[in-house]
Length: 476
Image (tube, rainbow, N blue to C red):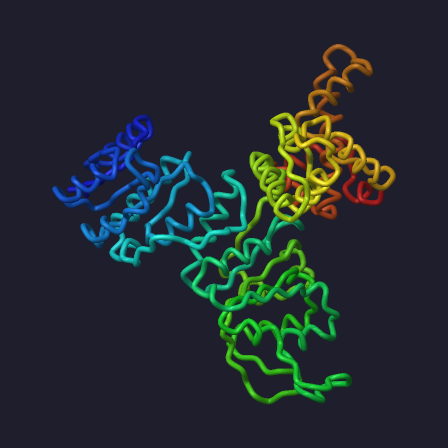
C-alpha cells in the first residue's frame, strides 16, 4: 500500500490538480487549507510526506514547521510557494525541506519528486529547522530562469563543494558568489574576491599564494596571499578563464592537495576556505585549444551554476529597475518612480551589458530626470543618446516588439513575384541570422546550430540553399 500524503494548500484549483495527479499514482491524499487543519491531521494520522504552501489562511506555512518536526520527525516535506524569491528558496532550504517548488511548477516533476522523497531512506526532513535567515539578499528576480539559479544556490549552502559560476559579463556572477557566502556555513569568515584577469601573469601566484621576503626582486617583506586571507571564509576567483596556464597548474595542485606554499617558501599551509570561481568565457573551446586545463575545469565545476542573460529573463527587468531606483535614492540620488509604460520600454531593450548595464542606465535616469515620475518619454532620449554613441556601422539588436514593424517596412519596399514572397522573406530573415551565428561561433557549424537551436544538417542545407560559404562569411 502506498504512503498517505498530507497536502496543505489553500488554492482550491492547485489542490485539485495535485490531488488528482497523486491519486492517479495510487497515493491516498488528505487535504487541508490552514496551519490549524494541518496540525489536527498530523495529530490524528501518520503521513509519509507533506506538501505545504507558504502563505496559508492563518499564517506562514514555513514559520511553524518546527511543530511539524516535533509531530513527525522523519516525514519529508516539500514546500510550494508563489513567493518566488531567493529569500523563500533559502528559507525552504533552512527548514530541511526535501525540495522547494516555485509556482507555477511542472506537475510531472513534482510527482517524480514525491516518489523520490517517499522512497528515500534518509529524508532531508531530518535536518535541523531554522526559524529565520539573514536579510539583505543581493539577488532580484522571480523569472523561471532565476528560480533555477536560486534552487542551485540552496543546494550548496550546507556544504563546501567548489562552485563554478558561468554567465555573460554583467549578469551578476559576483552577487551569486556573495549570496553563497552570506547564506552558507562560512558567513562568519571573510569573502575575498580576486579578479584574475586584472593581475599581471607574473604576479598571479604571489597574489594567490603569497610570497616570502626575498622570494624575487621587489619582495621586501612577506606577503599573505588570497588563499590565506580567505581562511574560514570564501575565495572568489573571478574571470578564471583568463588565468595563464602556468598559474592554472599551480591552482590545480593546490585544489587537489588542499595545501599551498608561498612563493619562495618551503612550509606547506593547509587551505581552509571555500572556492567559488566564475567566468564569462566559453571554456570548452579553450580546453580544446589547450589554453585552459580540462582537469582544472572539472575540479572547479563540481557544481556549475549558469546565470541567464538579462534578455532571457525580461520579466525581471521592471523589478530590477525599481530596485535600482530605490538603491539610487538610498545612495543620495533623487527619489524617482517608474511608470508602467517606462518599465515596458526598458523591458524591450536588448541590454547587451545585462544587469550591470541596466543598473548604470537607471542610476543615470535617477540623476538626470527632471520629474519625480519617470515615463517612456523621459527614457527614450537617453536611449537615443546611447544608440548615437555606438561605433559607426554598429546598431543595437531590434527589440522583439519592433520585429513586426521591421518586417512591415521590408514588405513595403516591394513584393516579389507571385508565389515567391514566402521564400524571399525567409531568405531575408535567415541570411543575417545565420551570418550572425557563424560570426559568434567563429565559423563552427556545430556550435552555430546549437546556438540557433536547429539540427546541424538543417543548418548545412540552408547555408547551401542561401549560397553562404561559412569561411567566406567570416572574411567579409
